[in-house]
Length: 193
Image (tube, rainbow, N blue to C red; front, side, top):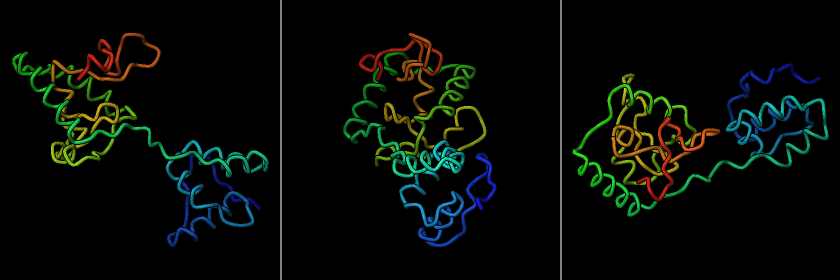
């Protein structure tokens, strides 16, 4: 009998080895044996995939198709070299200095920060230079809620980028031509540092 689990329930897998957890997840799905480690990891990382697996338990053909084709971990975030990041930061600093080192008003900062917090491009720093320049703890006050996160789209340290009047979000808003995720004018990547 297939255990009753709703798609919104977290996967309640036992502690132990990956093999133990693969076997437990296989049982949850009604399989005679374990799922592959790749399937387990994909289900833990992608709630939509996990939900689809759970919902398709009654349809063996669809379940088998899902088991044979787990989604790959998203690795399409651009990787920036330290030299590229230093060059981008230098250009941004120069542009900001030429504008008198002005920062956005708190209301605009709050709007930008909220957009960044909801964005899938917000991620942990990966490069040495990002880790050093992004060292900040998350605080529950405007301008500090992103902590040490960076933007996967441009490689910038979000807590710094969102403050600058001379900088803007490099990602276009979905369904709104000419507007970026901050709700401001979208500048193509060449024009946006």
